[in-house]
Image (tube, rainbow, N blue to C red):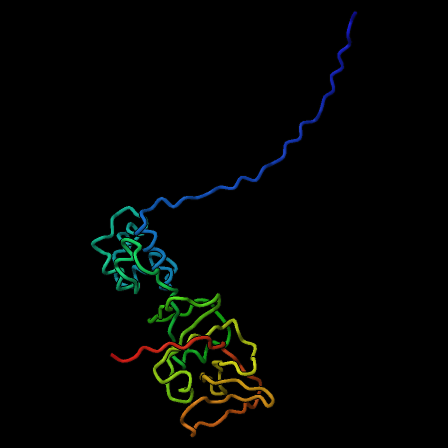
Length: 225
């Protein structure tokens, strides 16, 4: 008996599979922490940090890449990035918080629009607990118009992503003369109130629309030694 074999040509359908590639950072741990500290200090590149502090660019990059040990340079890097030498070398202790640019009130008056990186020669490391996601600047308080909450010399942290006024909120506002002031916002009627033990300070009634730089979310004050 003869059997007829029937072959059916079937199309082969090849489905592309997405491959998830995992990358592993095989640098020594101190090198990884050095990069973290540099980024939290506000420097976008290793070259920028090295040039700012006057270090050898090639040597610093080798330290951050893990090509050279950094034990001898640890104290220098720790001081520049405002971290502990112990954390940099061993990971002991708390990791540093993000570095927030500290600007003057005059400079803050020119920051009507959020613009990312803020040039600053001084940064403030946020204490443990950190801050929520935002576009942050820090300002040193001058005068006593808000001393009920922020005494003179204290540092306020301002989130420039929060620009819609909420009744009772604390804000840094650009004044008509282009400078910045720190006050409490009140609605109906719209006004900026001082919060001070000095009753000579008067409430400000804006003549036009408010230009809000950001909302104040934290005050930090170091007590004198």
